[in-house]
Length: 364
Image (cartoon, rainbow, N blue to C red):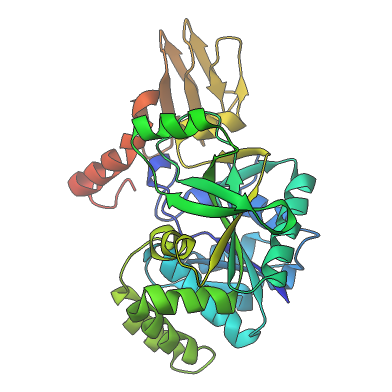
């Protein structure tokens, strides 16, 4: 049977100060009054019944997610006591689904994407389900056509044709330096696609990969899965999960599987409008723009003699105004205000850590 999993455990430090430990980016209602998690959950309507849509996220956000999502129940929440990167989140979730349904086919999404048009997205994911269902030992990933030489995304190097219009993957290439990114972009989408972070696989296939490539993580996760539904589950989870080696699914599984004759990795092109809301610059793509390229998330904002600047705030009684700003990010919240050049938006994570070191948890 088909299931979906939304990964919603990220801390969103590059979207500070609006993204905080209490309300990380996936829960902020900053896209026309809706959160990224709500958009991701509702986007699957008509593809997977709501009772088979699962979410993996931090246990501290369980209640708020249950309260905000219609059709989402407590049995569909897979909670992490701490974040241990995507391999462990996905292997843990796959092991839980394997206990519920050994024949489960799981599609993986993240709670920080804006994808349009939705009807075309659903058709492409349906194609991915069919490929995973009809082929043994296949991991399906979805690739986005690059629109610039990005260094913040991984790349999929495409090989020969496979089932259903997909392409076999030659290699995963994680977040390259700029010269390599420029080379991949110049080669075009027939050879390289961005790694979208979305997948489909049989849970049994993923678990076999984890067992082969990361056996220690596999053994530990099986201990957790064996305790699922028992009275001592929380104790086992709290004891085992924090000690798991942190590693991404790309490095741990997708890279070695793409070079392993025992498995095949199939890439399905997804030629859609796709925004990964991982930074304030990316978020600006969801906002209205003026003739000077300025972006605004609220009406109470005014920029004079300014260009290509983002203004965002969650305080609708507060005016944000600026003069002579060029390629800036200005974010206001009741607790903190951020001012940053757009070309340094990836450094906001470092600023977040500096704020935490100096002020503790007061402003994060």
